[in-house]
Image (cartoon, rainbow, N blue to C red; front, side, top):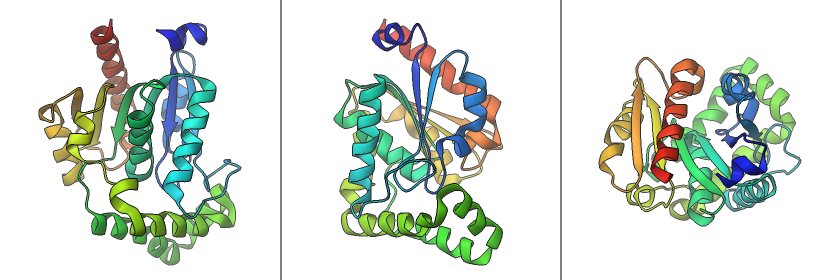
Length: 241
C-alpha cells in the first residue's frame, strides 16, 4: 500500500477522540499495543488537549479542516473515530477526502442519532462537571480553562446546523468508498443495535459487538478492541488486493 511504502512499511493510524477527551486519554491502550507495528498518530482536536487551535464558532467545520490538514500532512492512513465528536468528524474526512483514508473504524457510535438526543448528551458534560469537582479538575488538566468554550462551541454549532455537521445517516455510511467497521459495546442499547445492524446496511460496512463493554470499548475491553480492529484491517487489505 502507498501509505506503508511512505512510512517504511508501517501503516499510518489516526486516532480521533470523543468530546472533552484527547487522543492519548481515549486510546492509551491502543497506542501502547500498536506503536511498534503502526505509525500511530493520536489526534487532539481544536480546543482539546495539546492542540494549539482553540474552538471556532462553527466548531465542526474548523475541526474538520484541522483533521484533513493533519492527515494530508502525515499521509494516507486508517481512521479510528470515537463517540459523537470523533465519529462524525472521521466520517466527514473519509467522505470528503477518500484519497486520504484507507478505512474507517467508528466506536461508541450509532448512525441516525437524533438532534435532541445529541444535545442532551452534550448537556450532560456540563452538568456532571458541576456535580463532580474531580471531573471538572480533570477537564482543566487536560484542556485548561478552554474546555467550557469548546463545549459551548460544539453545542452552538450542533444546534444551528445539526444535519450537516453531526448527523451521519446509515445510507451515508453505505455510500462511502472505503471499508467501514462499527465496533460497539453491548451495554449501550442503541450502539449495540447499530453494530448488530451494520452488516445489513450495504456497501462496505461491517459491525461487531463486544460483550461487557460500554461506550468506550477501547477502554473497557482493550484487548478485544485491538484484536477486532486489526482483524478488520487485515480483511480490508485482502479485499483491496
